[in-house]
Image (tube, rainbow over all chains, first blue to last red; front, side, top):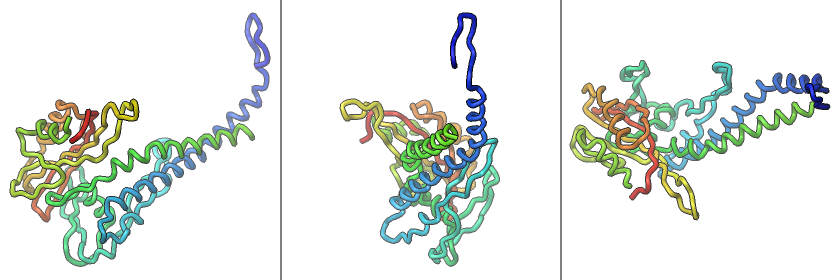
Length: 171
Length: 112
């Protein structure tokens, strides 16, 4: 704004401002992706730490915690998201196996871990750790990990957004 | 305030409530776990309240239709001061049990 008159005001440098805003807008997609990526990395780190603490009872081989990773950045409803969960199977668990025994009311497969031969999905291992069974204590870790991660994730994402805005305002 | 006692009181008309794991012979029972707890309303290095995240799990013999229990327990928990619970279905074929887990939170004064 260059000056304000009694009857109104006039602006100067609008073209420059518009160019900066356009530059910022064109970079927002990449900035959002970087932000989700950064937040996902922090959350993964917190989950791995929490699983390690919950599962570490002397015999854990660490396959569950090392299986936790992001499935990449996806476009969802005009935004960006990532999902973090245990991938793959633990072939070291030769004494256990998983099979589908039915379907839940919502259509999800209900699986069981049995006691002979084969490998076990890491997702199932995480489930049993978190929820236990009718006769086995649960070791809940998800809520604590999410509560611990929330401010760190927000900070990591904010850092990326701030950096993108700073970069656009300089260009 | 004792969160375990609050849970026991909330569902006392349905079944007994045990901390962490049940090792007895009943075929309908609840177990609860504290998922996380954090200080709230800090002053003079002490929390004015404690925020608890809890999970209450109900186990029953596989095959029983306990669907009405979902909302019944959720409403009882809300009446006892807990937040509106999310519900997860549980299945433990090895022990012939099905179940539900209600997860919710409450801000209380303390836990024994």
